[in-house]
Length: 144
Image (cartoon, rainbow, N blue to C red; front, top):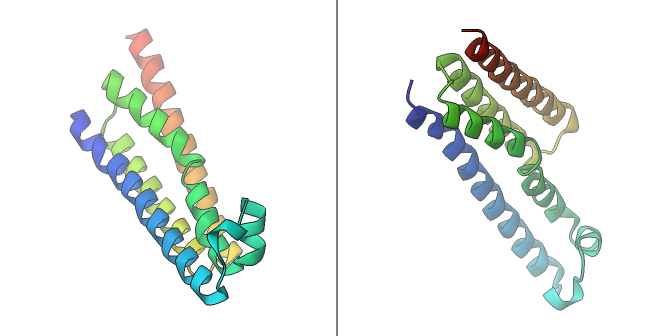
């Protein structure tokens, strides 16, 4: 497997962050217009959340795109540099991105914690799996 294939889930996850960012922006603009709030009246995040609560979920979802995905990007970089990834790692990476998409969709729409949390846990376990694959490949590299 070439590292080109590994770029597919990486680029999809970056695209997801951009989509969530645009969604956050649109939610904020709509809330600012609805409440007739001036931007200079919002000094910090806490104030933003109090004055525009309907824009908070998308904002939190955007911040969430820089938590678990940072570990994902690091693992994918290691796989690309070492060229140790196979189809299993690619498949797990794609499943991780799908879980992040579902998580972000729920976060930006209904924001039902019960369902959102399930996708968060699924994404976490998929990352553990990717990490386990990297450790396994590293051990195999040194043994053979």
